[in-house]
Each structure stands twice: as C-alpha cells, then as structure tokens.
Length: 186
Image 1 (tube, rainbow, N blue to C red):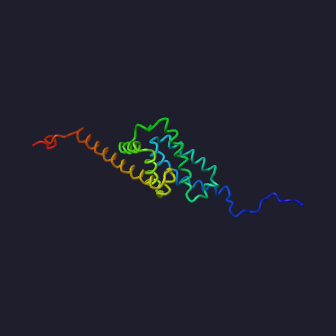
Image 2: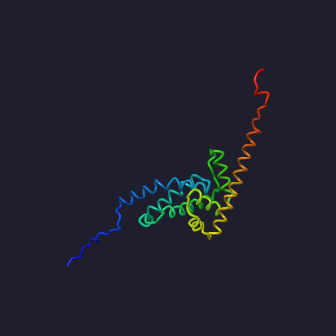
C-alpha cells in the first residue's frame, strides 16, 4: 500500500500569491503612517526609514501569523520603534538641517517629553489606538498611561505656545518698519 505524500486541501491555507498581495496592501496602507510615527518618536528621518523598512522585513517573514491579527500594524510598530530608538540613542535628535521651522519646533517639543509621554501621545494622536492599547504598548497600567498622555499633551501644548511666541517676537523685532516710511510722499 502506498501512502499519498500530498496533504489534503486545507481550507485555511492561503496561496503565496494571496499572501504577497495581502502584504503589499498592508505595506502600502501602513508604511507612511509608521514612518511618520517613528520619525516623530526619534526626530531622525534616516533612522526612522531604516527602522520601518526592517520592521516590514520582519513582518513579511512572519506574515502568515501577522496577517491573522486584528491589526497587524500593532505588531509592526513596536519593532520599528525599538529599532529606531536603539539607533537614535547613538545620535539623539539628529536632524536634517533643512527642516521647516514649525516642524523643527514640534520635534524639539516632542524631544523634550519623556519617552513614555512621547509614545503615549504618538499612539493616541497619530496611531489612533484606544487608551487600553496605548497602555499595553507603552507598558504601563492604564491609569499611569493616561496620566503620561495628559502630562505629555500639556507639556507639548506649552512648548508649542512658547515656540510660537518666540517666533512672533523675533519677526516683530527683526524687521520693524517705521510708520513714516510706509506712508509715501506727501
């Protein structure tokens, strides 16, 4: 008697073409969001790009499992953030020199937050996760995570207000126009 070497068809098996298409769709949908979140976390675009790319490589290698999750992005984000933070710790808040003044001010304000405050804010504002998911991803009890988020938001708002105030003061003092000069001949 010969045994069949082929397995019976499995209803849950997904062909590799379907896997690749599903991953491609996920990548296209999530890449820019994760890049923005990781850039806001570290302030370093090159590090963010590299970390997000590597996190997606890991996700692809585990896509059969990851694709079954309710939100695969919740699995990829921690990998990207860990890699980015590890790299960014060697060059803290290294930034391109040609950043817009407002972007630089936001990154400076984010950089002044504690890591837990920054993560909590980014998760609730840019990733739009629930407070429970945010607490889990930050690794704090719910009440402590909510407190970190509130403190981070207050600190960020204060820093943004100070930055706007400084910019408006520097504009008003850098090029004052005397009233007589603006009248014309007359």
